[in-house]
Image 1 (tube, rainbow, N blue to C red):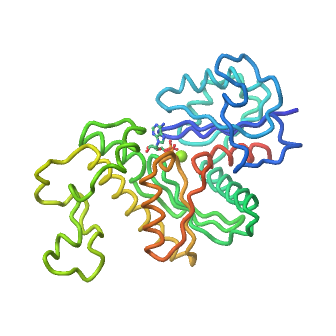
Image 2: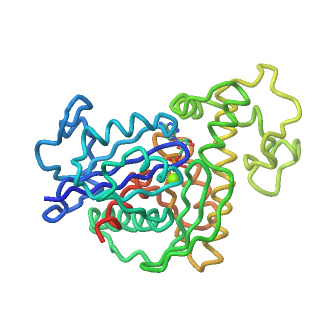
Length: 311
Ligand code: ADP
Ligand code: MG
């Protein structure tokens, strides 16, 4: 029995996918997600006892890499075949020399694309939908954002933009001192973007605008703040709104240039971030494309690295 793991060490988060025996397991990604705790792998366990029948996923902040190292040592048997990927992979590998013999490097963009394709196929199969995806644009909203055109085996990285989940955390922190990701995601749906942004309606008032009045004319450009002031939740909503608008605009336009109108958004920026998810879906449809945000998208790189390590 050989265990397999994929470790995607990104700029913000280290994502790990692990399965103890892939040969006789149907990788039901959409159904089978379970945490380390659910599988009885509490951090106090010193070894993995029973075979892990479904892949489980765990993540650590990259700035607490030692915790990830300790977790790997506690839970992954030494012979586990590990695919390492992501910008901090080399550093993490260096801290785990005892796994050197069974570790492989997987290029980040290959891992991300492979994982995304597998997640989408598993989702389609679980829904009894057509698993043939055709061409689509993959938009990975991580710390920053990268764009990939994908059609089965053809995977082309198109470029990226320096605006992503890191912008959400950084800019909200600068504007109102809230830097905790969970807190930002919780506050944002309660906020009012119009306290910060300039809308088309405000520019045209009192006349009726020729396009929807609630569209953003200029992010962060409201000249006079409301009498009640700008609250942290308003900043959080405005920052997430700006990131969603730009990521979607770039993603949909890139999709058009690649002759597809399917856009798939992944990356941990979507994890438990209801406002970013909602705006991404809405703006993509508004621009005439279809959007998907697969539940396991944050683990695309880890899942892809796991599978590519097997090859
Ligand atoms: P990377 O691969 O560059 O580390 P991810 O795809 O993991 O990027 O996404 C990182 C982003 O996800 C962060 O910038 C933040 O917006 C968001 N995020 C989600 N969960 C967390 C968390 N627990 N801690 C910090 N950021 C988080
Ligand atoms: Mg990443």
